[in-house]
Image (cartoon, rainbow, N blue to C red):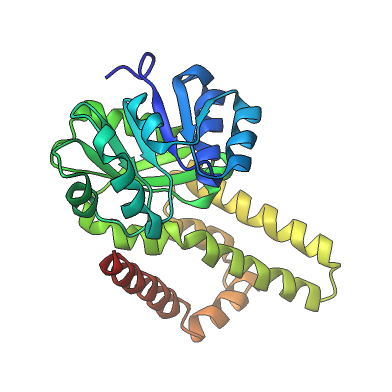
Length: 273
């Protein structure tokens, strides 16, 4: 399958589809005439067409018929209905990629009722600014070529990792929900800075750049996270004083419990579908 000649279609023209399309076009991997989109919301199709010049369809089935790769950017509660709608148009040479949270590949296979390559992906919201991380899990019929196509697509909005599908609940709890944990921590730090007398806007700027810089340093450095922490923590200094509060209040256990709760909920939601 050649990504430069085949059409890739998006069912759903929401935020994640928009981010992916933006990344694919800006990266030069695809041109606008190689990408298609469908949605039952006319305003969403109008927006994505005006931004990127895509050919858009009100009919999901019609769009699928014109595509070689189909990316399901839909809510989990809607996926069964949409798959039933397009199943007659799905061919054996299609590659289906789903980002519907909690939906196992076996469920997709059972609805379309044919053996084709299926890939499940869990992206996260920083993909909206091309800084995301996406975990990919391939079904039994997925080849290296299929996986490379998916990695190119999601690599346009950040980094990718490949995992076994039974690890997707853990991925969802860690990186899928992770931005929410980080934003909450940032909120708390902004409030703490303000409580110490900083102007709210100054506190916000300091916190955002601190998280951004720390993440970039962790990514670019050869040192482990532990070593990076040690490098900024002088014995008896200010960082040590702050970290001692985190340690005494059980930050590590709290974090494990939070991720564990999110993972458990992901499992529960998957069973609902």
